[in-house]
Image 1 (tube, rainbow, N blue to C red):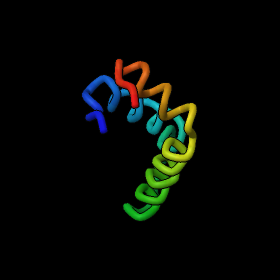
Image 2 (cartoon, rainbow, N blue to C red; image 1 turned 180 degrees about the vertical axis):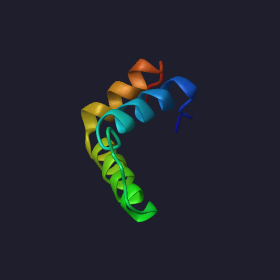
Image 3 (cartoon, one colour; image 1 turned 120 degrees about the vertical axis):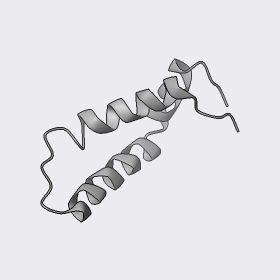
Image 4 (cartoon, rainbow, N blue to C red; image 1 turned 90 degrees about the vertical axis):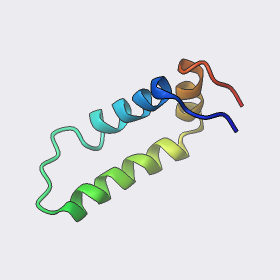
Length: 61
């Protein structure tokens, strides 16, 4: 399994912070955690999205 370097991670983080965490003003840390988990779930479930991140980072499976 390839390691995801800084380029790949920045793509994942960019997607997470512009969708689930965009304009988020949580009242508790649990609300922030729930939003972040939803984002990781979206990214992890989107086969096309995962492969796009790997491709952009120059990685392959």
